[in-house]
Image (cartoon, rainbow, N blue to C red):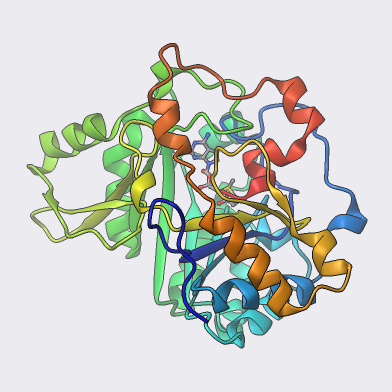
Length: 341
Ligand code: SAM
């Protein structure tokens, strides 16, 4: 079957699969509230259902699959899902985004099951900051998780750091040094006004230009590296050979190259991180649709896609919070942690 293409000529290339909406951290930029509305358990896709849908998407060109959440390592026996997905025809790149807390114990098993790449989120090297900002005192476990991932021999281990003014913008250079020391590539992420970021303000965004300025002052101007098609990160190299990336989704969005879509843990398919509504694939799946029916549905909907969510946000004059808490409670699929980051 040929690759599905949308109205702006963008091919369906990658699928982010949220395997759970639960998380064991409460990052201020993602889950700052005290209470959340969780997806009903009966609606959560089984591993077999996820694998079938991944096969349908792969048959339309989505050969890259990233498992995310919530915190994906909270999903029991995730390595079994990885094993099933790695056997799907057309899936050629299988990756995981995790906060790393539970990674040390699972890294080798995930690698053995066929996981190719791991990205660990780590915003600070200071345990007390993580405690204050993410309500977690598991900083040592995250570091152990990163080291275990490197030791497990993944094709790549990356570290994502969201840079927030007044929180960790004084750690850009130390995070870079940490990456060099641990042999992992750091990717700085601009703070995004996604659903769930109910405390977002423009002032707290540290732009790609500012990040590069801080790096240049210490190391000299980083050399831009050729971008990989559809990759959200722009990559750079320092004179000493260290490479790093910046994901400038807030100030310099890359919608024109976006080949990603997202499947929530309950089988709702979102064509854009900023989309208000998704498509319920679970009901079609559970009503007995064949793979061909599902592929036809996905192809038809992708063909109608014209989303440019991040670019549209850029054009909002007094840009503020995307959704207020009440709106997130009314539809938890608007949350970043449900949609899958
Ligand atoms: N729990 C996993 C983790 O921490 O990596 C996976 C899910 S998390 C939602 C995925 C990524 O989204 C993390 O790297 C997190 O830092 C990022 N993220 C969440 N909210 C964000 C925001 N408002 N702006 C930028 N990145 C955000």
